[in-house]
Amino acid sequence: MILKEVAYFCVLIVVKKPYKLDHNTMKKKKLLVTLAAAVMGIFSLSAQEELIYDQYHWNYYLVNPALAGAEPCTHFMLTNKFQWAGLDDFPMTQLLSVKGRIKNVGLGGYIYNDRNGYSNRAGGQLTFAYHIPLSKGRQYTKRKSYDRQLSFGVSFKMNYFYISNKLFDESPEASYDAAFADRDGFAPNANFGVYYKSYGGFVGLSLTNLIPVTGTLYGSAEKPAPFTGFLFGGYTFDLKNNNTYLEPMMMLKMDKYADIQMDINLKFGQEVSKKWGYWVQGSFRMAWDPANIQSEMVLLLAGFRIRQFQLGYAFTLDTNSLITQQYGTHEIMLGYTFCYQRHFCR
Image (cartoon, rainbow, N blue to C red; front, side, top):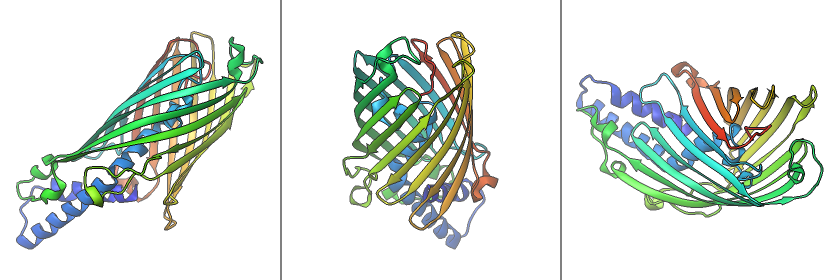
């Protein structure tokens, strides 16, 4: 993520300036643009996945395929994410997901589109899951057996990446290395997950990028997306006759390069009636890489439900040195569920 941020700001700085440059400055400018393109291109497919996984606050299925159909209901979710708002050509990501259940079989999928300066990315995922009811106790649902359950899921995903000349051509003085422009590539892969819930408690483990596939964008110069594991767990504490709840949750992510991320989340929600409910959440994110470079983020989320419709908003603020250059990340979610769900954001 740090390399991506540095490269992105380098491109913005060197390309957007309209004044004329001398020959030596032009050579430096060309080199900087080329290096920035190389860094962003090689790491872009992996970085795009970060944007998808970051939206798990709305839908845990995005980080664990076993969540597809874990609840006996079909659910659609559409999100639009504006990253680093306030900058020219700030990254923007749209994602549409769906998940549902037929008896004990869960099905799910998502598609996304991402615009990031000179590049465009798109892709999707298809999921098959199987759920094993373990109890006849009833606490949250009318269907007794769904309160305690063990679930397994597997996904196939495909990412597509395209680099355009557009950003380079916006400045008449800017020249570029053709090796980094007008290129595209595909990167297929697979995920696996297991999920267990027992009344108020839940825990999930998932592994992604199971196939060490090298993308077709830069050939041997491109690194495969890193093998990554996600572990999350939490508990729902009922308050006030089960109409109000408090849900602490933690997620740990680690890839094969020992890049580590930990999220600490605390959600408060109230189901006023079957007609409407609301929730608010505060989250704190810490990340470390093997060089012990640390970054931190603060997330504030809120949402409400009107019958089967859900609307949510999230604000993310990076607390690193780039905070003075941008106004944070904004995300809007619109969802629809074909039945009443007490925990409509899981």
